[in-house]
Length: 482
Image (cartoon, rainbow, N blue to C red):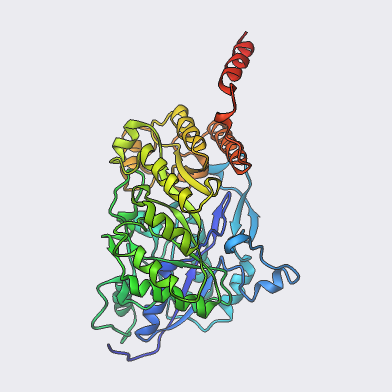
């Protein structure tokens, strides 16, 4: 490794522009991995997370107001209403910028020494307005600094990013090595790692010490996913599926909890339970031997086929509080299309195991997809009702057509979506394959029904087990029709 010069890099996590956004254990883990690695090989790192609720400068914005933090460390971002893009005028909701006020961001930039390069991440493709605005401001304040854009949006839509966001360079996929190599071409005598890591565990842990305060830690036990769901782009974004060493994972969790004084840990893997005996089970067994009492969360769905009696008991013993199960649909054709990743029988078995391990059914959730190509309302209702009958809660997941996926290509081929669609119109809030106010209200009604069903489950009422309810409902419908 050669370290010839101390260059300054500015890393930025941009704002979110959307109808809604929420801090659901959300941190830019990829950018924080990059920060640790670049610092290790010799760069000075400055960092601004526009979504950081605890940024010191925010005290000027709301001096007597603490950030809202709900149970387990989650909570809303700062929300500032902004003009809605014309292309989204048909949506009957307010549009907002989430994160620190723009003047505070500008003030923070002006207090920094000029960076030699700016590295900017991106998330959802329909959030590109955040990176776009950051690039505009950087051009004004640091006109000589080259801007490098990476992340999900940059990976999936590099051409759109170059033409609309207009960074100097675009990086696709995992960015640690590519960013280092690019910087050596931009900066004279830049630090070089002559023996770069070949696996994720070869990189230092994400640089969470860039934050003044943390309510939780997100953890990756793997990158990518071996499954290839028709609506998902994980394999494009993260590359070949790769798992981490369980010893390293456990150490990262225990050391992070000690250093940052947090109990809440969120696993953001797409396949957390895969190869469970070689990965998650030894991780949890080691953690259970430590003196820390954790609260674990799985915002991404767990593969229910992997949940047996022993694993369910280990999850309960280890302190898993947020259990979300992958399900998607009861429709047989849909299940075949998804390679039978999960069936209704698999879900039923997993729920039984979890209940016997100590979980109350009403504390469990299962994902149902809505808005998929050629998906009928009946399919959505049947899937919701099946989950409700199990006595668990429904977590609706709205379809967003992601470039490069099977479902995106199908939608374009069948004329449901233009091939050059503005990413703003792929926002899952809009139900992108329809893009009308009527469709928005139709799917909103489905969401309201899910809320009613979940409210009932939360109070131990299963609507489909009420005696004679179906007969009474049929009579009421007959009377209405008459």
